[in-house]
Image 1: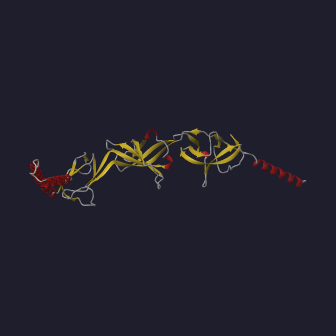
Image 2 (image 1 turned 180 degrees about the vertical axis):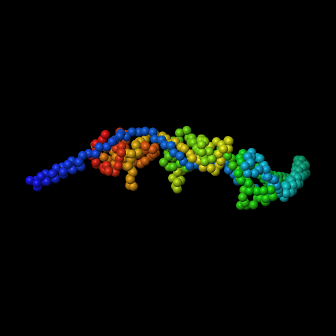
Image 3 (image 1 turned 30 degrees about the horizontal axis):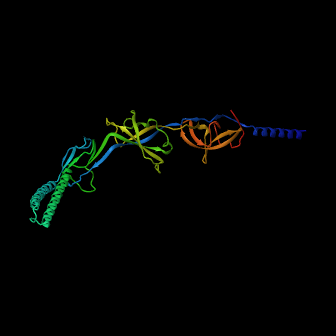
Length: 350
């Protein structure tokens, strides 16, 4: 009797175990739908001057006078320094005298040719060969006179280089000379470095995933370490057009107005950008996406059976995520997915 009773109890336990194993799992699900994917991110940016130039001396000489120093705001065409080079002035005087001499020779040859040409109107007075010879002399003297004019003009232009002028409005940020310094040698430091900071260039490396998205209004908001409690606006003006192989990002350049000269070139900024997909895409709760070392997937329920569907992530919006894969609107997905729900598992949805 005891043997029969023990056998019956074992069979009842196996029946309970089998019944438990075949009971379908109960899971929460949701219906997949399209939605607008947008993302607000903060990226580091670098503030650069709108224009920057290193001013050097074209001719050799000694600095005679300085009119600007570091921090000086200068206007376009303003004289920053004067170079003393007496030999250039002497050379210019020499060339001016050569111009006068060449002009005199040319004028004499022209007057002589005019008289001979008038006399040649009478037959037999002037031989044709003689007339041609005199004409050629006039042409040669004319060419010599023009050449002397060009030489004097060129030397006069070199003389203009004795005055170092500002190419545009800006602020002197470096000065490497003093009165009496010899300048004009190759490979020497620039005399001045000039920045135009009335507007600044803001360069931001945008990760590849966001380069195809829309930036509403083409605007950005930035703060700096110098003014952490003040927000500045910037306008997107250009993109690099290619992805950097090392950083996997594209450089976007913004224009930041800076008439008050509050912002300083060379500083760093925290830039806030709001990206928006041009078209609606599939958006799911983050809990529905399973990430392993080998794959990233969601669990679709079809005919009360679990199916793993590989997906590619898009924008991560905190509690929601944009995904791409072999899915369509209306599909039923498990809300809280995990690896234990294998493909083919029977599910009861709610």
